[in-house]
Length: 116
Image (tube, rainbow, N blue to C red; front, top):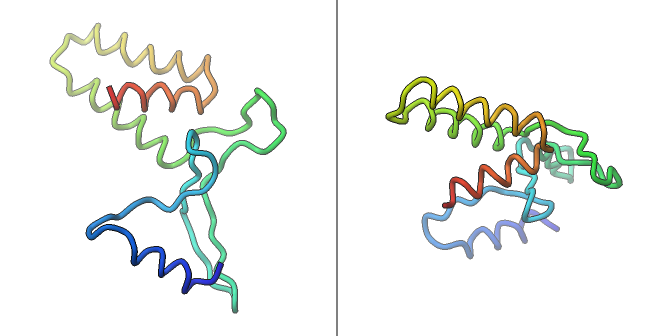
């Protein structure tokens, strides 16, 4: 795709829209984190995603936007009007979930929780 075609697409966005540039699957979007112009080519680098063919084993950690989601959830727990034991239990639950599940499963659960 030529840059002019992409600019044309951007120009069709609703006024004030500022979406993230992503690729990959809807359930695990890879977000654009860096660009580099090299002659006639614009290289786009996206945050990490699982490699094809890894099967059920996910060989990656959390990426930038996922870390921000986790940070937001931890801040929500800390800001809650609850006793320290309840806050500790909630944070322990997040930690155990991160240990037992794949990173994409954790993010799916956190996104479901934030959309509820």
